[in-house]
Image: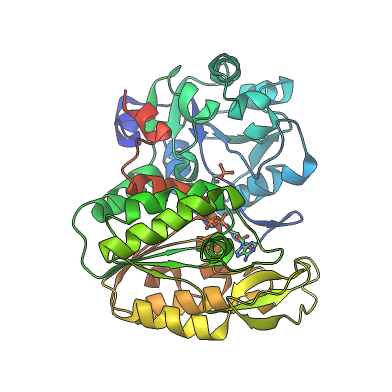
Length: 403
Ligand SMILES: Nc1ncnc2c1ncn2[C@@H]1O[C@H](COP(=O)(O)OP(=O)(O)O)[C@@H](O)[C@H]1O
Ligand SMILES: O=C(OP(=O)(O)O)[C@H](O)COP(=O)(O)O
Protein backbone atom coordinates (compact mmCIF):
# COMPACT_ATOMS: atom_id res chain seq x y z
CA UNK A 1 0.00 0.00 0.00
CA UNK A 2 1.52 3.34 -1.01
CA UNK A 3 1.16 5.96 1.67
CA UNK A 4 0.68 9.67 1.56
CA UNK A 5 4.35 10.12 2.50
CA UNK A 6 5.30 8.62 -0.85
CA UNK A 7 2.87 10.96 -2.58
CA UNK A 8 4.38 13.93 -0.77
CA UNK A 9 7.87 12.77 -1.74
CA UNK A 10 6.77 12.55 -5.39
CA UNK A 11 5.41 16.10 -5.12
CA UNK A 12 1.78 17.26 -5.24
CA UNK A 13 2.12 21.00 -5.73
CA UNK A 14 -0.74 22.20 -7.91
CA UNK A 15 -2.25 18.70 -8.24
CA UNK A 16 -5.92 18.06 -7.49
CA UNK A 17 -5.97 15.51 -4.66
CA UNK A 18 -9.25 13.77 -3.80
CA UNK A 19 -9.35 12.85 -0.09
CA UNK A 20 -12.05 10.25 0.68
CA UNK A 21 -12.67 10.98 4.36
CA UNK A 22 -15.31 9.73 6.80
CA UNK A 23 -16.94 12.95 8.02
CA UNK A 24 -20.06 11.05 9.12
CA UNK A 25 -20.33 12.98 12.38
CA UNK A 26 -23.27 12.93 14.81
CA UNK A 27 -25.54 15.95 14.31
CA UNK A 28 -28.24 17.62 16.36
CA UNK A 29 -29.93 19.53 13.55
CA UNK A 30 -27.01 21.37 11.95
CA UNK A 31 -24.98 21.23 15.16
CA UNK A 32 -22.09 18.76 15.26
CA UNK A 33 -22.19 17.02 18.65
CA UNK A 34 -18.77 15.40 18.24
CA UNK A 35 -16.14 16.38 15.68
CA UNK A 36 -13.74 13.49 16.32
CA UNK A 37 -13.96 12.15 12.79
CA UNK A 38 -13.09 15.57 11.34
CA UNK A 39 -10.12 15.99 13.67
CA UNK A 40 -8.97 12.48 12.77
CA UNK A 41 -8.41 13.36 9.12
CA UNK A 42 -6.71 16.71 9.77
CA UNK A 43 -3.12 15.40 9.61
CA UNK A 44 -3.70 14.20 6.04
CA UNK A 45 -5.45 17.37 4.92
CA UNK A 46 -2.87 19.63 6.58
CA UNK A 47 0.03 17.73 4.99
CA UNK A 48 -1.55 18.14 1.55
CA UNK A 49 -2.25 21.82 2.17
CA UNK A 50 1.34 22.38 3.30
CA UNK A 51 2.53 20.63 0.14
CA UNK A 52 0.48 23.05 -1.99
CA UNK A 53 -1.99 20.48 -3.29
CA UNK A 54 -5.49 21.49 -4.36
CA UNK A 55 -7.43 19.43 -1.82
CA UNK A 56 -10.91 18.05 -2.52
CA UNK A 57 -12.49 16.46 0.56
CA UNK A 58 -15.39 14.04 0.06
CA UNK A 59 -17.47 11.92 2.44
CA UNK A 60 -20.84 10.38 3.07
CA UNK A 61 -23.01 11.52 5.99
CA UNK A 62 -25.83 9.34 7.32
CA UNK A 63 -27.87 7.18 5.02
CA UNK A 64 -29.78 9.40 2.57
CA UNK A 65 -31.60 7.52 -0.17
CA UNK A 66 -29.40 8.29 -3.18
CA UNK A 67 -30.81 11.80 -3.70
CA UNK A 68 -30.16 15.22 -2.14
CA UNK A 69 -31.64 15.62 1.33
CA UNK A 70 -30.81 18.81 3.28
CA UNK A 71 -30.91 16.92 6.58
CA UNK A 72 -27.75 15.09 5.49
CA UNK A 73 -25.79 18.00 4.01
CA UNK A 74 -22.04 18.02 4.64
CA UNK A 75 -22.06 21.81 5.02
CA UNK A 76 -21.77 21.72 8.84
CA UNK A 77 -18.78 19.40 8.54
CA UNK A 78 -17.16 21.69 5.94
CA UNK A 79 -17.65 24.66 8.27
CA UNK A 80 -16.10 22.80 11.19
CA UNK A 81 -13.21 21.68 8.98
CA UNK A 82 -12.54 25.34 8.11
CA UNK A 83 -12.50 26.23 11.83
CA UNK A 84 -10.13 23.39 12.67
CA UNK A 85 -7.80 24.20 9.75
CA UNK A 86 -7.96 27.89 10.51
CA UNK A 87 -8.52 28.73 6.86
CA UNK A 88 -11.45 29.05 4.47
CA UNK A 89 -12.91 25.89 2.94
CA UNK A 90 -15.02 26.12 -0.23
CA UNK A 91 -18.24 24.11 -0.24
CA UNK A 92 -19.88 22.72 -3.38
CA UNK A 93 -23.63 22.17 -3.18
CA UNK A 94 -23.41 19.15 -5.45
CA UNK A 95 -21.03 16.21 -5.68
CA UNK A 96 -20.10 15.85 -9.35
CA UNK A 97 -22.15 18.63 -10.97
CA UNK A 98 -21.31 22.18 -12.00
CA UNK A 99 -20.91 23.41 -8.41
CA UNK A 100 -18.28 20.75 -7.68
CA UNK A 101 -16.40 21.59 -10.89
CA UNK A 102 -16.56 25.31 -10.12
CA UNK A 103 -15.27 24.74 -6.58
CA UNK A 104 -12.39 22.57 -7.79
CA UNK A 105 -11.53 24.90 -10.70
CA UNK A 106 -11.46 27.78 -8.22
CA UNK A 107 -8.86 26.13 -5.98
CA UNK A 108 -5.39 27.65 -5.74
CA UNK A 109 -2.53 25.43 -4.51
CA UNK A 110 -2.88 24.91 -0.75
CA UNK A 111 -6.65 25.51 -0.76
CA UNK A 112 -9.42 23.10 0.26
CA UNK A 113 -12.93 22.36 -1.05
CA UNK A 114 -15.56 19.99 0.36
CA UNK A 115 -18.06 18.50 -2.08
CA UNK A 116 -21.60 17.57 -1.04
CA UNK A 117 -22.55 14.19 0.47
CA UNK A 118 -21.45 11.34 -1.83
CA UNK A 119 -24.63 9.41 -0.96
CA UNK A 120 -26.82 12.08 -2.57
CA UNK A 121 -25.95 10.07 -5.70
CA UNK A 122 -27.43 6.59 -6.19
CA UNK A 123 -24.23 5.47 -7.91
CA UNK A 124 -22.22 5.76 -4.69
CA UNK A 125 -23.83 2.81 -2.89
CA UNK A 126 -25.19 0.91 -5.90
CA UNK A 127 -24.75 -2.85 -5.98
CA UNK A 128 -24.48 -2.59 -9.77
CA UNK A 129 -20.81 -2.38 -10.85
CA UNK A 130 -21.66 -0.37 -13.97
CA UNK A 131 -23.71 2.23 -12.09
CA UNK A 132 -20.99 2.60 -9.46
CA UNK A 133 -18.36 2.82 -12.19
CA UNK A 134 -20.22 5.60 -13.97
CA UNK A 135 -20.38 7.62 -10.78
CA UNK A 136 -16.70 6.92 -10.11
CA UNK A 137 -15.87 8.22 -13.61
CA UNK A 138 -17.60 11.49 -12.73
CA UNK A 139 -15.70 11.73 -9.43
CA UNK A 140 -12.42 10.94 -11.22
CA UNK A 141 -12.96 13.91 -13.54
CA UNK A 142 -12.53 16.17 -10.50
CA UNK A 143 -9.06 14.98 -9.48
CA UNK A 144 -5.56 13.82 -10.44
CA UNK A 145 -4.75 11.74 -7.36
CA UNK A 146 -6.74 9.78 -4.73
CA UNK A 147 -5.97 9.58 -1.02
CA UNK A 148 -8.05 7.07 0.95
CA UNK A 149 -8.44 8.14 4.58
CA UNK A 150 -12.07 7.34 5.44
CA UNK A 151 -11.33 4.38 7.69
CA UNK A 152 -14.93 4.23 8.97
CA UNK A 153 -16.14 3.35 5.46
CA UNK A 154 -13.44 0.97 4.19
CA UNK A 155 -15.77 -2.00 4.75
CA UNK A 156 -18.21 -0.57 2.19
CA UNK A 157 -17.98 -1.56 -1.48
CA UNK A 158 -18.96 1.93 -2.58
CA UNK A 159 -17.91 3.97 -5.62
CA UNK A 160 -15.73 6.47 -3.78
CA UNK A 161 -14.13 3.73 -1.69
CA UNK A 162 -13.43 1.07 -4.32
CA UNK A 163 -14.11 2.20 -7.89
CA UNK A 164 -12.54 5.66 -7.72
CA UNK A 165 -9.09 4.53 -6.50
CA UNK A 166 -9.08 2.06 -9.41
CA UNK A 167 -9.23 5.08 -11.73
CA UNK A 168 -6.57 7.32 -10.16
CA UNK A 169 -3.09 6.95 -8.65
CA UNK A 170 -3.97 6.07 -5.05
CA UNK A 171 -2.39 6.36 -1.61
CA UNK A 172 -3.41 5.66 2.00
CA UNK A 173 -3.72 8.65 4.33
CA UNK A 174 -2.35 8.91 7.85
CA UNK A 175 -5.58 7.91 9.61
CA UNK A 176 -5.90 4.63 7.74
CA UNK A 177 -2.25 3.85 8.42
CA UNK A 178 -2.70 4.52 12.16
CA UNK A 179 -5.95 2.54 12.45
CA UNK A 180 -4.57 -0.50 10.65
CA UNK A 181 -1.38 -0.35 12.71
CA UNK A 182 -3.28 -0.56 16.01
CA UNK A 183 -6.01 -3.01 14.98
CA UNK A 184 -3.40 -5.40 13.56
CA UNK A 185 -2.24 -5.98 17.14
CA UNK A 186 -5.65 -7.45 18.00
CA UNK A 187 -5.51 -9.94 15.12
CA UNK A 188 -2.44 -11.75 16.44
CA UNK A 189 -2.05 -13.21 19.95
CA UNK A 190 -3.69 -10.95 22.52
CA UNK A 191 -3.27 -10.76 26.29
CA UNK A 192 -6.06 -12.71 27.99
CA UNK A 193 -8.78 -12.56 29.20
CA UNK A 194 -9.91 -10.92 25.96
CA UNK A 195 -13.36 -9.35 26.35
CA UNK A 196 -15.44 -7.92 23.53
CA UNK A 197 -18.37 -5.60 24.20
CA UNK A 198 -20.96 -5.22 21.43
CA UNK A 199 -23.93 -2.89 21.34
CA UNK A 200 -25.31 -0.11 19.18
CA UNK A 201 -28.02 -0.11 16.57
CA UNK A 202 -26.51 -1.56 13.37
CA UNK A 203 -27.42 -5.04 14.54
CA UNK A 204 -27.67 -6.88 11.23
CA UNK A 205 -24.32 -5.43 10.10
CA UNK A 206 -22.51 -6.52 13.20
CA UNK A 207 -23.99 -9.83 14.36
CA UNK A 208 -21.88 -11.75 11.87
CA UNK A 209 -18.64 -10.81 13.58
CA UNK A 210 -19.60 -13.04 16.51
CA UNK A 211 -18.98 -16.05 14.30
CA UNK A 212 -15.29 -15.14 14.30
CA UNK A 213 -15.18 -13.85 17.87
CA UNK A 214 -16.22 -17.26 19.18
CA UNK A 215 -12.75 -18.49 18.14
CA UNK A 216 -10.96 -15.51 19.56
CA UNK A 217 -12.60 -13.90 22.60
CA UNK A 218 -12.95 -15.27 26.14
CA UNK A 219 -16.01 -13.16 26.98
CA UNK A 220 -18.59 -11.41 24.84
CA UNK A 221 -20.77 -8.80 26.54
CA UNK A 222 -23.89 -7.78 24.66
CA UNK A 223 -25.79 -4.52 25.18
CA UNK A 224 -27.49 -1.74 23.23
CA UNK A 225 -29.92 -2.61 20.48
CA UNK A 226 -28.11 -5.89 19.92
CA UNK A 227 -29.22 -7.34 23.25
CA UNK A 228 -32.85 -7.92 22.27
CA UNK A 229 -32.11 -10.40 19.49
CA UNK A 230 -30.15 -12.38 22.11
CA UNK A 231 -32.91 -12.15 24.70
CA UNK A 232 -35.42 -13.28 22.09
CA UNK A 233 -33.10 -16.16 21.16
CA UNK A 234 -33.26 -17.21 24.82
CA UNK A 235 -37.04 -17.31 24.56
CA UNK A 236 -37.87 -13.97 26.21
CA UNK A 237 -40.32 -11.42 24.86
CA UNK A 238 -38.76 -8.05 24.05
CA UNK A 239 -41.80 -5.80 23.51
CA UNK A 240 -41.11 -3.16 20.85
CA UNK A 241 -37.31 -3.20 21.34
CA UNK A 242 -34.97 -3.22 18.34
CA UNK A 243 -35.11 -6.80 17.10
CA UNK A 244 -33.50 -8.63 14.19
CA UNK A 245 -36.11 -11.38 14.07
CA UNK A 246 -34.55 -13.18 11.08
CA UNK A 247 -31.25 -13.52 12.96
CA UNK A 248 -32.75 -15.27 16.00
CA UNK A 249 -31.84 -18.82 14.81
CA UNK A 250 -28.27 -17.71 14.09
CA UNK A 251 -27.98 -16.18 17.55
CA UNK A 252 -29.30 -19.41 19.11
CA UNK A 253 -26.53 -21.23 17.29
CA UNK A 254 -23.97 -18.72 18.59
CA UNK A 255 -25.18 -19.28 22.15
CA UNK A 256 -24.82 -23.05 21.75
CA UNK A 257 -21.40 -22.86 20.14
CA UNK A 258 -20.20 -20.51 22.87
CA UNK A 259 -21.26 -23.03 25.52
CA UNK A 260 -19.42 -25.83 23.73
CA UNK A 261 -16.27 -23.72 23.35
CA UNK A 262 -16.25 -22.27 26.86
CA UNK A 263 -16.74 -18.71 25.61
CA UNK A 264 -18.78 -16.72 28.09
CA UNK A 265 -21.72 -14.72 26.72
CA UNK A 266 -22.81 -12.03 29.14
CA UNK A 267 -26.31 -10.68 28.54
CA UNK A 268 -28.25 -7.97 30.37
CA UNK A 269 -30.04 -9.02 33.55
CA UNK A 270 -32.07 -5.81 33.78
CA UNK A 271 -33.13 -3.15 31.34
CA UNK A 272 -34.45 0.41 31.25
CA UNK A 273 -37.72 0.50 29.34
CA UNK A 274 -40.26 3.06 28.13
CA UNK A 275 -43.27 3.10 25.84
CA UNK A 276 -41.57 5.49 23.41
CA UNK A 277 -38.21 6.31 21.94
CA UNK A 278 -36.99 9.42 23.80
CA UNK A 279 -37.04 12.90 22.27
CA UNK A 280 -33.38 13.53 21.50
CA UNK A 281 -34.05 17.16 20.58
CA UNK A 282 -35.73 18.40 23.75
CA UNK A 283 -34.15 15.72 25.97
CA UNK A 284 -37.42 15.87 27.94
CA UNK A 285 -37.33 13.49 30.94
CA UNK A 286 -38.22 9.99 29.77
CA UNK A 287 -38.96 8.47 33.21
CA UNK A 288 -37.95 4.96 32.22
CA UNK A 289 -38.87 1.91 34.25
CA UNK A 290 -36.42 -0.81 35.25
CA UNK A 291 -37.43 -4.40 34.51
CA UNK A 292 -35.76 -7.80 34.61
CA UNK A 293 -34.35 -8.75 31.21
CA UNK A 294 -36.84 -11.61 30.90
CA UNK A 295 -39.79 -9.35 31.71
CA UNK A 296 -39.90 -6.57 29.11
CA UNK A 297 -43.62 -5.65 29.05
CA UNK A 298 -45.55 -5.78 25.79
CA UNK A 299 -45.62 -2.34 24.17
CA UNK A 300 -42.40 -1.20 25.88
CA UNK A 301 -38.90 -0.94 24.42
CA UNK A 302 -35.50 -1.47 26.00
CA UNK A 303 -33.35 1.65 25.76
CA UNK A 304 -30.40 1.01 28.10
CA UNK A 305 -28.94 -1.71 30.29
CA UNK A 306 -30.12 -1.49 33.91
CA UNK A 307 -28.19 -0.88 37.16
CA UNK A 308 -27.54 -4.56 37.96
CA UNK A 309 -26.22 -5.11 34.44
CA UNK A 310 -23.92 -2.10 34.80
CA UNK A 311 -22.37 -3.74 37.88
CA UNK A 312 -22.20 -7.14 36.19
CA UNK A 313 -20.48 -5.75 33.08
CA UNK A 314 -18.01 -3.74 35.17
CA UNK A 315 -17.07 -6.94 37.04
CA UNK A 316 -16.63 -8.85 33.78
CA UNK A 317 -14.26 -6.16 32.48
CA UNK A 318 -12.32 -5.63 35.72
CA UNK A 319 -9.79 -8.41 35.16
CA UNK A 320 -9.65 -8.30 31.35
CA UNK A 321 -6.26 -7.75 29.74
CA UNK A 322 -7.61 -6.83 26.31
CA UNK A 323 -10.97 -5.22 25.52
CA UNK A 324 -12.54 -4.27 22.20
CA UNK A 325 -15.78 -2.30 22.46
CA UNK A 326 -18.14 -1.30 19.68
CA UNK A 327 -21.62 0.07 20.11
CA UNK A 328 -23.19 2.13 22.93
CA UNK A 329 -25.07 0.20 25.64
CA UNK A 330 -28.12 2.40 25.28
CA UNK A 331 -29.53 5.51 23.63
CA UNK A 332 -26.75 7.54 25.26
CA UNK A 333 -27.80 10.69 23.37
CA UNK A 334 -30.53 11.07 26.03
CA UNK A 335 -29.29 11.53 29.62
CA UNK A 336 -31.82 9.02 31.01
CA UNK A 337 -30.23 6.28 28.86
CA UNK A 338 -26.54 7.19 29.10
CA UNK A 339 -25.58 5.37 32.30
CA UNK A 340 -24.98 1.95 30.73
CA UNK A 341 -22.53 3.40 28.22
CA UNK A 342 -20.91 5.52 30.94
CA UNK A 343 -20.49 2.44 33.16
CA UNK A 344 -18.75 0.45 30.42
CA UNK A 345 -16.44 3.37 29.57
CA UNK A 346 -15.56 3.76 33.26
CA UNK A 347 -14.99 0.01 33.63
CA UNK A 348 -12.55 0.11 30.72
CA UNK A 349 -10.63 2.92 32.35
CA UNK A 350 -10.59 1.10 35.71
CA UNK A 351 -9.29 -2.17 34.24
CA UNK A 352 -5.63 -2.77 33.43
CA UNK A 353 -6.61 -3.86 29.92
CA UNK A 354 -5.40 -2.59 26.57
CA UNK A 355 -8.65 -1.02 25.38
CA UNK A 356 -9.82 -0.29 21.87
CA UNK A 357 -13.10 1.58 21.39
CA UNK A 358 -14.39 1.57 17.81
CA UNK A 359 -17.27 3.22 16.02
CA UNK A 360 -18.53 6.66 15.14
CA UNK A 361 -21.12 6.73 17.91
CA UNK A 362 -19.09 4.79 20.48
CA UNK A 363 -16.14 7.14 20.12
CA UNK A 364 -18.48 10.14 20.22
CA UNK A 365 -20.24 8.74 23.31
CA UNK A 366 -16.98 8.43 25.21
CA UNK A 367 -16.12 12.07 24.51
CA UNK A 368 -19.64 13.46 24.93
CA UNK A 369 -19.91 11.73 28.33
CA UNK A 370 -16.78 13.59 29.38
CA UNK A 371 -14.11 10.86 29.33
CA UNK A 372 -10.55 11.70 28.33
CA UNK A 373 -10.10 10.00 24.96
CA UNK A 374 -6.37 9.73 25.56
CA UNK A 375 -6.99 7.45 28.55
CA UNK A 376 -8.09 4.64 26.22
CA UNK A 377 -5.58 2.52 24.30
CA UNK A 378 -7.05 3.49 20.95
CA UNK A 379 -10.24 5.12 19.79
CA UNK A 380 -11.03 3.91 16.31
CA UNK A 381 -13.12 6.02 13.94
CA UNK A 382 -14.72 2.88 12.50
CA UNK A 383 -17.15 0.47 14.16
CA UNK A 384 -18.21 -1.86 11.36
CA UNK A 385 -14.83 -1.33 9.69
CA UNK A 386 -12.83 -2.27 12.77
CA UNK A 387 -15.05 -5.29 13.49
CA UNK A 388 -14.62 -6.58 9.94
CA UNK A 389 -10.89 -5.92 10.14
CA UNK A 390 -10.70 -8.00 13.34
CA UNK A 391 -12.66 -10.74 11.56
CA UNK A 392 -9.79 -11.02 9.11
CA UNK A 393 -12.04 -10.07 6.21
CA UNK A 394 -10.59 -8.33 3.17
CA UNK A 395 -11.87 -4.79 3.46
CA UNK A 396 -12.75 -3.46 -0.01
CA UNK A 397 -11.43 0.03 0.74
CA UNK A 398 -8.06 -1.27 1.95
CA UNK A 399 -7.73 -3.74 -0.92
CA UNK A 400 -8.43 -0.89 -3.35
CA UNK A 401 -5.46 1.04 -1.96
CA UNK A 402 -3.13 -1.90 -2.36
CA UNK A 403 -3.09 -2.65 -6.09
N1 LIG B 1 -31.55 -0.19 22.98
C1 LIG B 1 -31.36 0.58 21.92
N2 LIG B 1 -32.38 0.80 21.05
C2 LIG B 1 -32.18 1.60 19.96
N3 LIG B 1 -31.02 2.21 19.66
C3 LIG B 1 -29.99 2.03 20.49
C4 LIG B 1 -30.12 1.20 21.65
N4 LIG B 1 -28.91 1.21 22.28
C5 LIG B 1 -28.10 2.01 21.56
N5 LIG B 1 -28.74 2.51 20.49
C6 LIG B 1 -28.22 3.47 19.48
O1 LIG B 1 -27.14 2.92 18.78
C7 LIG B 1 -26.53 3.97 18.07
C8 LIG B 1 -25.10 3.64 17.74
O2 LIG B 1 -25.05 2.42 17.04
P1 LIG B 1 -23.92 2.06 15.97
O3 LIG B 1 -23.99 2.99 14.82
O4 LIG B 1 -24.09 0.59 15.69
O5 LIG B 1 -22.57 2.31 16.79
P2 LIG B 1 -21.14 2.83 16.27
O6 LIG B 1 -21.37 4.07 15.45
O7 LIG B 1 -20.36 3.07 17.51
O8 LIG B 1 -20.59 1.71 15.44
C9 LIG B 1 -26.66 5.19 18.97
O9 LIG B 1 -27.21 6.26 18.21
C10 LIG B 1 -27.63 4.72 20.08
O10 LIG B 1 -28.67 5.66 20.37
O1 LIG C 1 -20.62 5.43 10.95
C1 LIG C 1 -20.04 4.57 10.29
O2 LIG C 1 -19.88 3.30 10.73
P1 LIG C 1 -19.98 2.82 12.28
O3 LIG C 1 -21.32 3.27 12.84
O4 LIG C 1 -19.91 1.31 12.16
O5 LIG C 1 -18.80 3.39 13.00
C2 LIG C 1 -19.41 4.85 8.95
O6 LIG C 1 -19.46 6.24 8.65
C3 LIG C 1 -20.08 4.02 7.86
O7 LIG C 1 -21.42 4.40 7.73
P2 LIG C 1 -22.50 3.33 7.19
O8 LIG C 1 -22.63 2.24 8.25
O9 LIG C 1 -23.76 4.12 6.99
O10 LIG C 1 -21.95 2.76 5.89
